[in-house]
Structure formats: C-alpha cells, structure tokens
Length: 98
Image 1 (cartoon, rainbow, N blue to C red):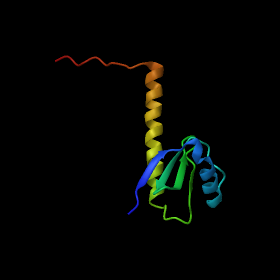
Image 2: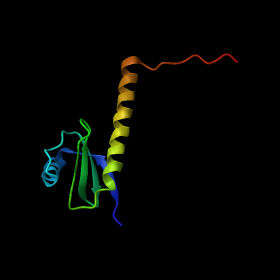
Image 3: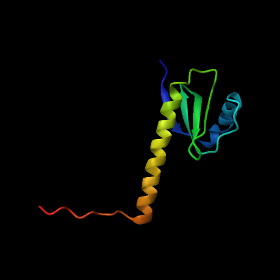
Image 4: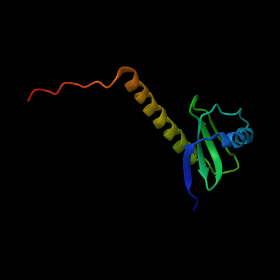
C-alpha cells in the first residue's frame, strides 16, 4: 500500500505539472496548485486559482481526484474567511442576557 500525500506545489514541481497536463491533454495549470502525490510521484493536481484539475490517465487516480478537489475547496474557504477577518476585524457578538 502506498501513501497518498496532498501538499502545496513548489517551484520544483513546475516541470512535472506541465508534463502531467500534457499527459491529460490539457493546458498547464495556473499555480499555485495542490498536488496529490502517491509514493514520490504526482498523480493529480488542482489549481488553487481556478479549480482546474489535471491527472495522469495512466494511473488509477479516479479516487484521488475528488479528495484533492475537496481539500482545495476547504483551503480556499478557510483563506476567504481569514481574509474577511483581516479586512473587517473580529466581530464580537453580545452575550444574551441570562
């Protein structure tokens, strides 16, 4: 059994992501991207900017892609909440009277 790692892409992954897009007959992803790595190979990636996905068609990545997409969605939502808090400040609601 191999380990699945989901991580942020690094500048060192650019060439691999371009090759992955070519295998998938897609144009390269807009970075930053989140990648799904099995063992030490990237099997799929999702752009954090536009949610486009590329996956290696020669790997059984069908079960990995939904997990990767969901994690990217969670991270984008958390990032939006954090930016909103920074912009508007934390809002404290009054406690209800006892």
